[in-house]
Amino acid sequence: MNTKSLYQEVILDHNRKPRNYGILDNASHHAVGHNPLCGDRLDIALNLSGEHINHIAFHGESCAICKASASMMTAAVKGKTRADAEILIQEFRDMALGKLNLDGHHHLGRLTVFAGVRDLPTRVKCAILPWHTLHAALNSVTTTSTEVTDDSMHAPVDSAS
Image 1 (cartoon, rainbow, N blue to C red):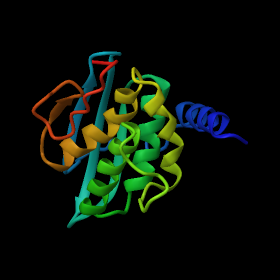
Image 2: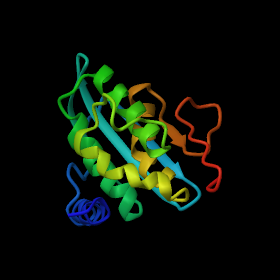
Image 3: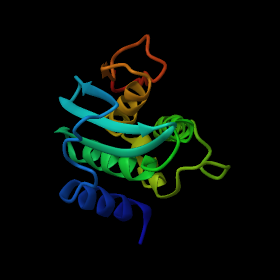
């Protein structure tokens, strides 16, 4: 199976049956993210026990790429430490922007299925929004946007901004 059809299959699967979708009551950390370019809005909630992400959930209205990215993100960071999650956040962002050497060492595993999004500038922010929102939640920022330029997670995408 080629990477394009694998990408499509994964997106469709996670869009139809998103993992960790729903509301997490009594979350220790929470953020709402918005991508004004396409209207995606996600709510990410998690519970940290010490430095470990014990529970994580998301809900909201978003396109298939954003929902699949959120679904895979929650599965990838559940049980990880805050520091491990921050590494994944940065690597995912860099991969989506075409700045990560996928032949080199990284921690993304199956998340590399999103590598092709770098060739779709208008969709990069759709894929990054869940990660951007998780970063905000981990840093006690309650709302964020893909268009906030003074945020370290801001991803300037030439053709999409």
